[in-house]
Length: 120
Image (cartoon, rainbow, N blue to C red; front, side):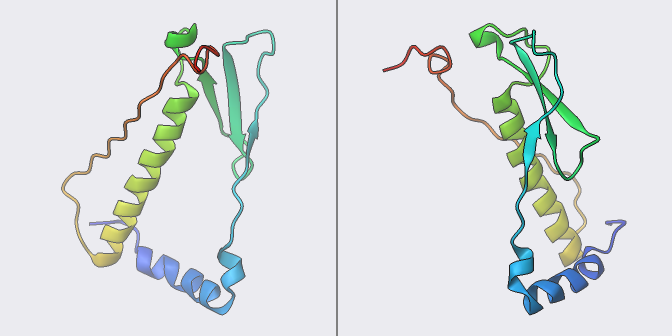
């Protein structure tokens, strides 16, 4: 079973949003992080809410990257997978459902010609 009582954790938050719906309107911000500007194939990003943690990213091998770090598309799909999995875990915990296993897989199609400015 979940080690955290999500329902108990969320009760005061739910009440705050009920009393003040505007409090639930949250702006998430991510910005570029310090990275070697002489390297055109790599970059880093950091969420403003967690400034001590950055994510490295790089160009995909299909457009000349080295494949040593996730590309921006991987990070985007990873964010979707993390959102889905966290939601499922929290809902299950709220409902008292013990998860035996959980796997989320996200996939997308991408035409690398757009990145190379080759499309119509």
